[in-house]
Length: 205
Image (cartoon, rainbow, N blue to C red; front, side, top):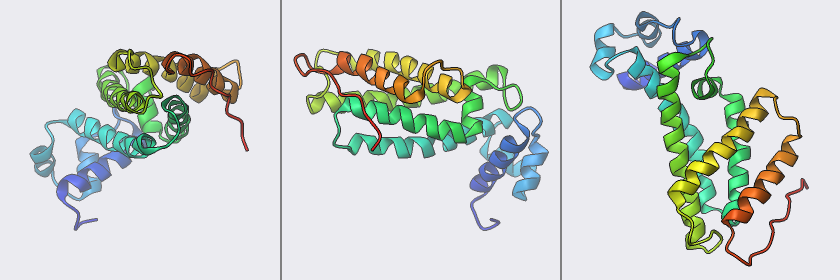
C-alpha cells in the first residue's frame, strides 16, 4: 500500500474509516494514520474532511456506474434495461452501506448537510446514466422520439428510487418481483413508441 500514490492511499484509508466509524466519528488524524501519511499530505490533495468524504462517495459511486453503464451496450429494449438497472441498484446499494447512508440519510454514518451534498452527487450521476439509456432507446426506436429525455430521466429516477428505497428498507407491501414487473409495465408503456404493444412481465427461469 505504501507504494500507491498518496491520494489513492488517503482515499483507501478514508473509505475504510468512514465505513467503520461513520463521517462524524472519523477524524483527519484517523485517516492519515491509516494511510501512513501526515496531515500536510492530506491537505495537499483535499481541502477538508468533507472533501475527502465526497471523493470517497464519488469513487464508490463510479464502481456502481461502471457496472450499470454496461446496460447501455445491451440488446434488450430500453424499458427492459431500465428494469435491470433498478435490480442492479437494489443489489449494489443493499451491499454498500456507505452509498445507501449518504443517499437516504443514516445518522450513524452521515447526516445533515454532508448527506445532502453526497446525495446530490449520486442523484446527478444516476440521472445522467438514465438520460443516456433513454437517449439510446430513442436512437434504436424502442423509446418514443417525442419524449424529453432530461425530464423523463428525472421522473424515472424518482419513481425508481421509491421502489429501491422500499426494497432496501423492507417497507414495500408487495413482493419485489411484482413491484419490478409493475414498474416495467407503467414506465415501459409510457416510453414505448405508440403501437408497440404492452411489455411482457419478466419471469425467472
